[in-house]
Image (cartoon, rainbow, N blue to C red; front, side, top):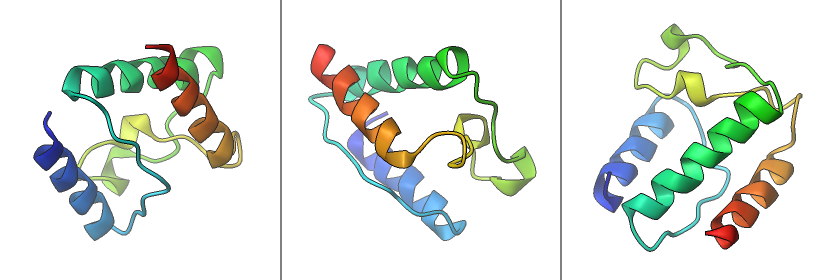
Length: 88
């Protein structure tokens, strides 16, 4: 997905009551997709975290990519995100 579709996705989440913690710019969609894929694998497989909300809580999509902020801090996720991006 391109930058405009990502902005639309963020806008839909905000409209649903969600907030953006931080964002990072990528050279292209392929780089963003790779970081997202690696981060989701880290969250789900390495950390063993399950989605924190149900599909009905996020009708705009993205519920399966959620996790409890009590299980892992946003700061730790951000740090890992930057490390993964740098490793590409």
